[in-house]
Image 1 (cartoon, rainbow, N blue to C red):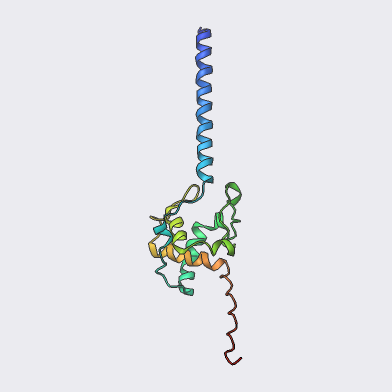
Image 2 (image 1 turned 180 degrees about the vertical axis):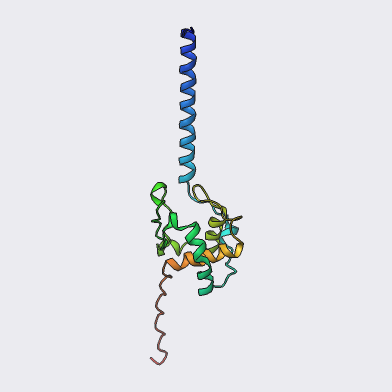
Length: 158
């Protein structure tokens, strides 16, 4: 019949404390990684979409979006999918025109391609054209920026 010596008890307490500390470090690291802002290289931000905007491109992207994106970003891109509440920060709201108008096509393509926990990378799951088509579909969720009215031309006859 084994007996618990004070040395065994002390070792178990130390091991438990180390295990608990390790768990805290892993959880903190995970939270920190998910909450940091995207770092997108300038070269990626400046990439232009080679797929011309068209209804056909948007229609082609819809099944990809439905299969891979709706659970987090929602059917209409509001960031309100069935899984959205599980994440902090929340998934992007593609209908937020002021924000979306500050994000380049290249940046969206980079985010789709590279992913970042909890969002997976789609670089190997989709072709390059499919990812560019998704950029067009995502753009269609937010209204385009309003055109500034042109100033009236000066009347040279006065």
